[in-house]
Length: 229
Image 1 (cartoon, rainbow, N blue to C red):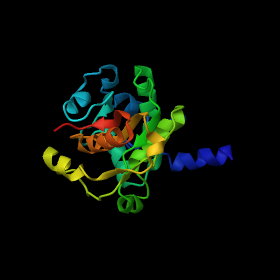
Image 2 (image 1 turned 90 degrees about the vertical axis):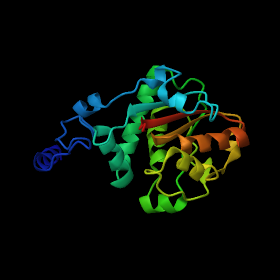
Image 3 (image 1 turned 60 degrees about the horizontal axis):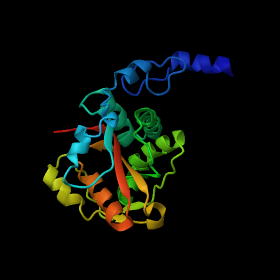
Image 4 (image 1 turned 60 degrees about the vertical axis):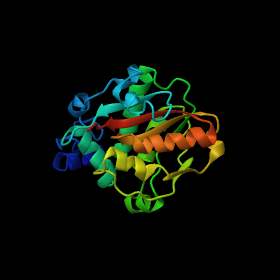
């Protein structure tokens, strides 16, 4: 069987999801070179980082961070694109594991009680086949002892893609979009709210407000990447 495995990979090598080069033995989905070159933010070690400042005066958070900077055409965009649009949840699980390693090392997870991913509207989730934020959270949870509550929040309104909307338009689009679906799962707990990319912060702000106002939660937020315009 080992011979057949080696023969197969000789002619059909596994390719890096970020750069499309052939993977070496021991590499998983992403080559070591690409992982080393992902643009880490280091935000988890600095409480007043750019992501945290994005929410100042908008919603009271315990902590906020992104693991990487998002740049168009860069490796992190290729990975997130594979997760969201190419039916590659395995890439999301891997990114979740990497995020956990970064956050644990930085001490970002102190006293966090539960992980909650930003929900997708059921129609969009059915079309995609999964919620990318939940996939990231699953990878994160699998590496940690922190429980995951995927259904604590629900998206009551389908706001559609917000990629091209301004900050104000995004804020207006999300204020009534989220509802608390399972209050007992998060009541009074420190929730780590997870998403794939932070741009204006409107989606995470809306989710955090629901958790704080309706369940008395303390909330921290975390994303794979941040893209500031």
